[in-house]
Length: 313
Image (cartoon, rainbow, N blue to C red):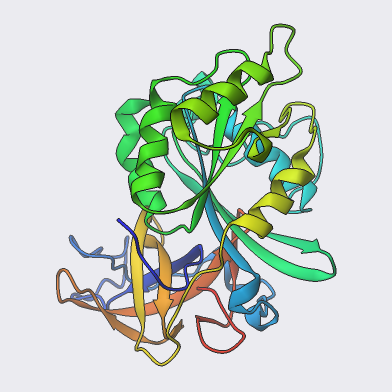
């Protein structure tokens, strides 16, 4: 499915007033909907980011897709490092993978998002990425993530070549009419054959060989070329600034103390703390209790909108 509008990786916490008084003990959580009673939270005292410095033209929204174990999460780690989002250390492995099973098995189970700030040719860009799973069992995580993007990085192992989920994920992006950037990873391996993989990509996906980027995510080779290609080839999101608030909830998490935290892609209007919004699916109303971006930790902002020169939720 192809969606238009200005999409950004915002997180937003929603709440509804508690239905029953609870002076002692835990708060009474509502059983359904994206709602939670108000509680104190750690990001309240953080300095809020001014997102007005990033107009729509300087925003890029993209996902990283690939077959399992082709290096998506390692590439995400290097992108976070080169943009200064995280400090560069030897301990940066699967930074976006937060589940215990992901850490133990070295695989991505749940899609994770992060916002990167990058200066290219004197212009500051806001790059919103989603690292997606590669296993077929989590294919819905991929399709859901692509609904909030305008482009993808299609990562292929230089040793193994194109595999089953490489093809499946390519067609998900192709059918969504997203810009596709082929990235050949692990060129540092002894048995790597990037020329063969480039020919496979050209034959199966009809993508010219000269559009492929050869990288080594482990060693950080040519990672800057990936960022340059993202800025040059992936189009900025389209939006209508005169529309009322319109946003897509493409992911959510639950916090035992804070309730539901929704990841949304904004297509129009603006949203800030105190606003009351309506779910188009359930027709229920909620109060916005906090808004911010993921860097990849939660960073609060004053508001998120798609008007003029501001963005983000």
